[in-house]
Image (cartoon, rainbow, N blue to C red; front, side, top):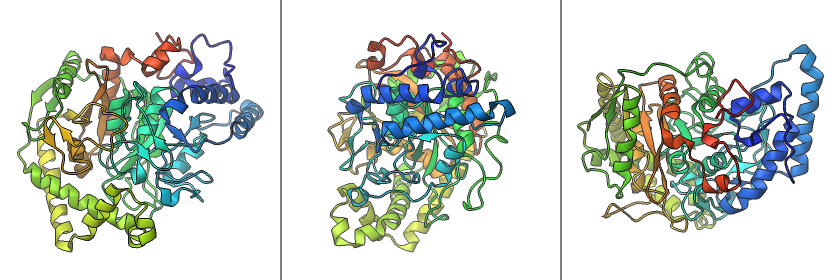
Length: 513
């Protein structure tokens, strides 16, 4: 099916930012049907190769839903009835988040036929904001591992080169954004799942503060404090608006933060003067973290753009026992994952269908004592306090978003990084656990490209509950970093003239050049 965009648009319709596309729909400069037609054509063109979107609904049903949105908009336009900003925009939540009536496989063959009976809190908010759910974005089995593959839907491939991994576990979302299959997306993050795929596909991801995006409904709403849902986008303003939609207190989520995304200022202007703010560059923690050749030099070169913006950059390695912190992570993650998978692991028939890494996590968790878990929580608390002390001198803490460039998509996980053997399936992503354990808001920024054209990212850890400052930093970065004008080769080859990552962040239906 070919898209039929409005003749008032001189630029490709899907190059528009989510905000600009939303405003165009609200002003009736473009119809929901036109947006859906363009989206379906884009999916037909690119998704078979990259496998970012799964469980897609029939095109006829989606066009019918878009047509109904247009009719409703026309009937109520005279009364100026307010609409959610996602009204008519195609969305595909990550397959770890349930959406009523859509597949909810979580990448597991055990759940291959499962359909969600209801939305969770986050997807319900996307629905209330007007989104049209077209399917799901692909994820590793149960989100385990930062490489998006599973036996149900297959492997998601990098937007920049299909030979490479897309990262994970929000790999499908990141690739869909980079190739304009979605204008904005959701994801989730326990061990870098919003940050690594963002860096590897040249988009933005933001892991919110603990409790910023309410979790549930889930069987456990108190102990699970490592993972969180959050936004991904091609530009900071869309990232901020998506976070505003996801965020806000809900009594059904007892750990959720008070207030709403609107009250937090996420939907306001992000432009601000950053001059004089201080960045601590943690790098590879003075050699503790294994890094593949080229990762550190690329990231350190990218730091220069912070200095261009008037920020001060200084090297820092917080004094801490990092090997003990790794053990802390293993215990808390094993405790959580083993609890979530205990029923499937206990049944021999379903256990054998779990991937080896899931079985390993369950076994590790079941071998823990109460003392092990408590001690890990104490060490986690000490780490949080150590980072708080760093913020006495610095405004942001920065590390690479991964320890290696995108690897071959056929690999299960890299067994060696920087000449060092990786002793677990996720040791190569150790760099991401520091923000996760602290529960601090963390921004995933594109950092540029290797000589081979492989994307890389930075992760910027902010002060407690200060997502707004991170979003402001992202806005300045978006305007200052010259590599933000680059786009995946397959999009450039298609003849589009405007970089997807530079699409207008609002205020106009046209793309700003």
